[in-house]
Image 1 (cartoon, rainbow, N blue to C red):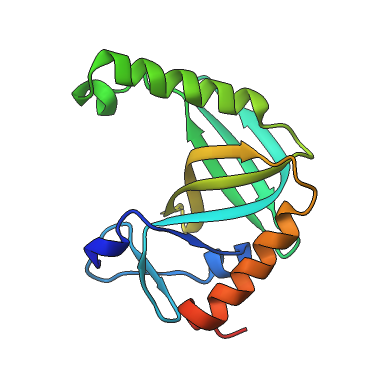
Image 2: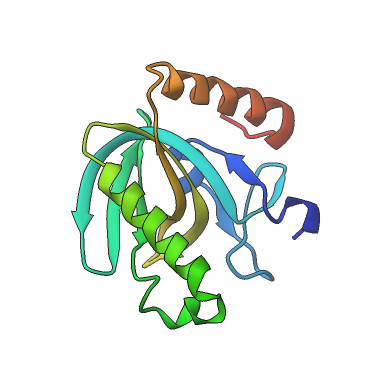
Length: 158
C-alpha cells in the first residue's frame, strides 16, 4: 500500500464497496478500478437496522443502491487491544463511541468512516466515526462526489 494513501478514506457507494477485491499481499487492503489499495472508506446512507450488544453496535447503511453492514466497537475499557494506549485516551475513545452509538437510530442519514474488511465472506465497515447528517442533501451530494471521484480518480467502470 502506498504510504501516502494509508490514512485516506475513499468515498464509495455500497455497490463499489461490495466490488472491492482483497489484496493477495497486504492484509486488510482491497482494490477496485484504479484505486491501488483501500483500507479505509467513507459512505453515506440511511440507517436501516440497529443491533446493540454489550461490546458492539452493529448497524446497516442503505445508500439507495445497496446495504453495507457496519460495526462500532464499544469495549474500549475492557479490550486488550486498547491496553497499549494511556488511560485518558482510552476513556476519550470510549465516551465518543458511546455517544455516537446513542445517536445511531433507524431512519437517520449518517456519514460513516472506518476500516473496510471481510467478515464471513461479506464486506463490512468497522466504524471509527459516525456523524448523523442534518443536511437533507448530504446523501445526494455524496452520490455526486462518488460519481465524480469514480470517473476522475478511481476510474471505476459502471
